Length: 241
Image (cartoon, rainbow, N blue to C red):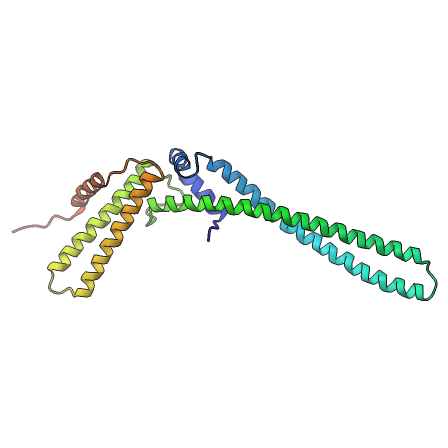
């Protein structure tokens, strides 16, 4: 599913800082502007909505004229049968209605073709914004903070990366403690081990996306060292006797 809502596109364009957005454009969109792509998408959305209304309106008129054609045909056939109306008069009325129906059908088909083209443009735009969404989400996979308003800068992304490293460290500490405890069963130890693996994978993905998609100067070793120092500061001091 490549669809993405207009609200989500607006959120992404609002929360990602301009330097990071432009860097993503260079790395993932050939340097083309997401702002211009958003404008093209908005035009496609507006045209799609208006075209659906116009197409339905035209189809309704086709049905009306088709019904009129049937009614006139019935009435005219009865009048001709009574020899009270000239043949050419009825033929002119019926021909006019048929011509109108044909014109409406042509217009509807033309409208449908333009609508399909707009939908293709919309689908292409959504594919790009979906990739952009995935990259942005990878920087903050757990949604820490206000993801609707917080502006994502290089510093913001690094803080989130460091929090992912702290998550890994905390999981490793919990695993080590569980292994030393005699009251923890094997299932819980296995669960903690799997949690470490998932936490590491999440960290590695955020690191990779930051470097490859946004050209951020992330370093794994440095991040873990700073995360370890921050984690040690947060840990409560255990009194020794």
